[in-house]
Length: 90
Length: 326
Image 1 (cartoon, each protein chain N blue to C red):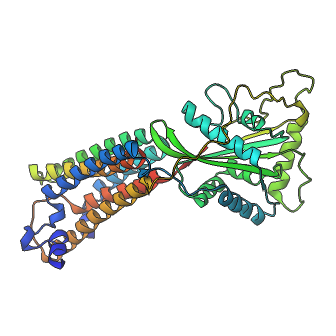
Image 2: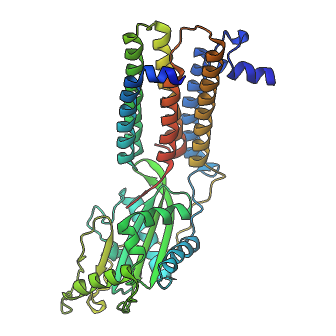
Image 3: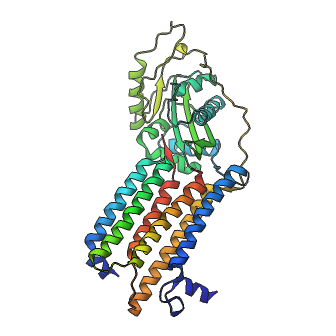
């Protein structure tokens, strides 16, 4: 597991940068929850792009993998939507 | 039950060596349920506010107790709860909901001092702290104490009394809880204790603001804050210069409080969201460990990527539920 992370350390650094920027923007958007939702959707989109590119560069890309990253990205968005729409009525 | 959990969380021959929860169909079902639940909760909040809605357990007594604890820890005298200041705080909170703003000054230019004067409190010093989206008094007080400007207000020797209001309502299309703290004094501050550095500093600030009093002869005195209303609002003017005009402000002190709903939607949705994320993280980690050990070759995405993404989602859920201060 850790060996795999070491092999892909540059990719993970770029992912951490995307997440750090997203977290900063979401924190700055407080208390505007609509804006926070929008930032999260953009971040999830970049996560999917990052995942697809990562597999493409490593010659492991397949349609199944693309769908998997899209589903995980949409799952994150669905969780955030449930929290904000259901919990705060945005 | 054990077999079901095994099937759901661990890669096995029964689930084609991929935890069932991580199958495309399972993820799609969870996504659909979450979107449906989001819309359903929203509809219930609108149509049955007595069942599902936003409420807080924040009370004036709790806020006073915690504030005075902080003041005593810093060698300061406790504040007294003042009904007029509480009415002013309630008036400010209701005005923010009515005019849809969250700031010290209203869009129509109304300052916090207007609410204090309208409540009949003739102040020498007055201050205001705001918070929104918090569900407990310790969180509010801790957030204020963590901000240098708000902390300065709470630990000021200028104030003798305080009033609080915690009101629920809709702000910018979002159900939220607004907490307003109005601090005030009807007399000049006592000389600070020489050993208390913070109190000493505050006293110096007052000395400079009171050195240029507002003229008392003005027929319609409009006290201008002598300190810019940025993060903190503080004003020092001679009491004699204050007018009685409320500027058309209506304070609804006798307003019936909103009925407390059966379930707090913010807490429920936060806990459910955290639970769902935690389940997926657990399934991904277990899947990763078992597959690594058994050296099974599969064509799937990197579980570690998804764990990172979902851990971030969990972090952000916690961040979003946290309130804000002003």
